[in-house]
Amino acid sequence: VQNSFVLVVVVLTALAFDFTNGFHDTANALAPTIATGALRPKTAVAVSGILNLAGAFLSLKVAATIASSIVVPDLVTLPVIFGGLAGAIVWNVTTWFFKIPSSSSHALIGGVIGAMLAHAGFHAVLWRGIVSSVAVPGVSAPLVALVVAALATMLVRRATKNVEPKSSSLGMRVGQIGSSSLLSLAHGTNDAQKTMGVVTLALIANHSISPTSSTPTWVIVVCAAAISIGTFFGGWRIIRTMGHGVTTLAPNQGFAAQVASSAVILSSSHFGLPLSTTYVATGSIVGAGVAAPPHRVRWHLLGRVATAWIVTLPIAALCGAAAFAAQSVMGIDGGVVVVGLVVALYCAVIFVISRRSAVTAGNVNEPWEPLAKVEESVAMTSAA
Amino acid sequence: VSATSLDATPLVKWSALGQILLFSLLSGIGIVGLVSLGTFTLARARDRTTGSMSRYVNVVAVVLCVAGTLSVVGWGLYLISHKS
Image (cartoon, rainbow over all chains, first blue to last red; front, side):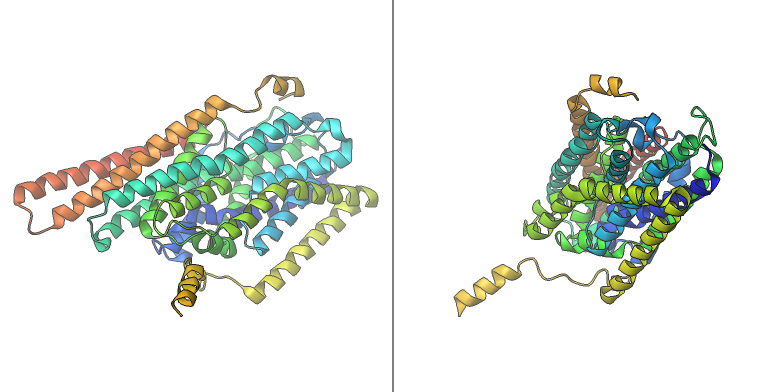
């Protein structure tokens, strides 16, 4: 049964998700670059936004839709896609509010699983696919990135030991800008296409296009624009956590972390096991942090981040299931509108509350409490 | 992708993970090594106390490092635009 009205609402919801995906992931490509001052915050997000846009057009081979490996494709309906997107948006906005880097892809997968469970039950979900495309990459991505970034940090520190910081800063800056740019391009290619895939799936589910047809050009254009605008909006809250919260990065550490992230992301996408950018970027920053003096990262903060990673899928699934159930109770046309408005209202409220402790381009680089604070206070007490 | 075809695929693609680790290490360490070496030689090339021949060698080394880095970046761009 075709339903153009619901299709329009689903496409708008998909673009809203794409937008949250953009600002949520800005930190992955830019946090070290901004934190070490290689680029000014606003310049960085502008460059990254443009490169995300370019990246979305770079490879026109839209990846197999994210949904096809986690749920039975034939059972996908418009309300399932809508519920999945709504759940993912709610979780993305919530984690952004709490300044936590979390995977937008996993939020979307969770949302779709939840909506599908509510729609068709247990058998409609491909559990093996979830383990191999969510759990395995989720655990391995940060570890691989950590190892590469730690070794890279040791190498760059050793190699530039006798070079004055003033002379080495150019190389570190250019290196960070270059790797940020590559990451932004890759993000545009991978993540914008994720939404393109979802919109295409919605068009197929609505029988607006045939299952074999390729993604319409307008879908590519609007998805590319949405993720680019989201990136330009700047997820300052998450950039602050990753750039300053996890550890304090010197330019050479930032450089090593950025290169490690690019290397892992590009290799993983090349070998057909795409690793989540968020996990890779976080792992790289931790690796760069532990490999250089004072060899410290804020484990309590990382504990919160890891907890968020673990609950991303179940909570997004709950939200997705709730969104699906609510719209099905109210009837499809009214249901998607009401649920859509509730999600929009939730986002607006979160945004207004976030203004009280707003993180902006102006204060994103303010110093975090010093890493060695605990030791200092211990030393002071023992001295007294 | 049907449920049955998924059942046939292993839960953990160890070979893909291994390749990712190997390639990330090679390319990541390679780039960092090239940029570090370029930075080091650039500093020496700028050093006025170094002899002119040695400075010439250093400038060549800087150019080679930059060229090497750019070629790895070009390879990265190729991977992005021809992703599997």
